[in-house]
Image (cartoon, rainbow, N blue to C red):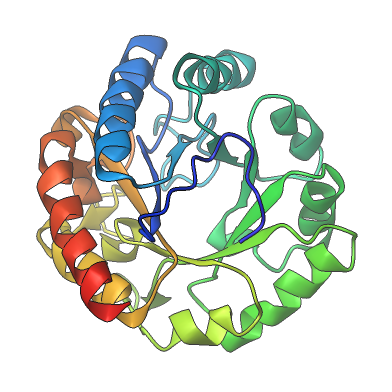
Length: 269
């Protein structure tokens, strides 16, 4: 895989991990989660990218939490990176956000619903940052080669692809693990977004539901299939998280899960 600034590559052969809260809710919370993730992944020799959205642009209702302010949240992500010497990733939603976010983070993430937006992909590519493209819920893994081409043909070879499930009816998602090898055929590292793939969107309440009890199942299957990385949203208290609490992994359950996944990785290598 291409080099990602500050990503600590190890000889363990482990998958890498994108993990953190859904949204940046405040500095204390972000630093608390990052400190635990850093300690845990260093000990288990798992390369870590800390994730957090500086703003949530895709919410069901107008009164849903969207963020604490763009620059404030981005500065918190920058502080996490500087404090713990880890790369950070955040999602962008419009082309003009790419250059702004690139000043603070190492990886720019393209949300699944926006993975076909040419101007957004080109703007992200032009920053020179690593671009993580989430596969649209409406696309096959094979179709993602066109998104990869847009970034590469813009002069940026640093592309990651992330699966987050496919729409199954109106209010559910299902994971088709064929997507992992299909996307790996592009030559890009492929990540399984374990927690978002367990969402139950479009609920009548206007609040997205989820099936967090299946996080371990999806993660195990992804590693068994050969995913290069995992994306897991985690929070000390998912029940009070301001975004995506219904499908987050409690932070105190992460270590046990990672230990199981390391053993699976060793078995299939």
